[in-house]
Image (tube, rainbow, N blue to C red; front, side, top):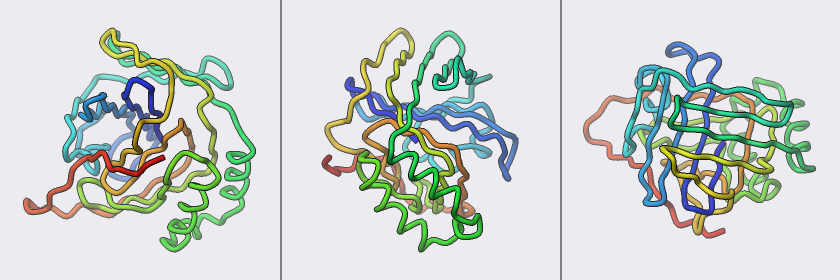
Length: 216
């Protein structure tokens, strides 16, 4: 879902093994300490994350993003020679409980907006990662709906981009949002499903990636 660093950088990884609008793809989202977002994607923007999250962000189409498990708890993400990110995962009573409850919920139930709106506040309390929403508007306008099936927290992480290291994981001074979707204030990782409304082409709607003042 996302990971903040003490330096003010923020990273998120999306590894879409299947998509209804194009081929499978991977993307890395990066926010620098000045609040500027860049989305790196391995397929065309209209067939990947920028279709929904591209307003207010720079988009970079890259040849590949490699994701490799070095052991059963550690992931290494690389993008050419410029980007390296190591993520160490662990579980907690809260993540284990969320995984158990998610696995026991019928797939049809996850299509209910009422259920998703109820799960968000529960996850906010359980995960202690700031506000969590499972159903909200994206910067480009369409509604996002997320279904977490397996949840872990990030125990430790190291990352660098263009020779700059990001330092230790730590909450930002204020929780940030993409559109109406708050990003976690501590590292979270999940396997699940996502769905979006179809974009409505218009030149009038203005949406942006914003740093929203939600204190944590």
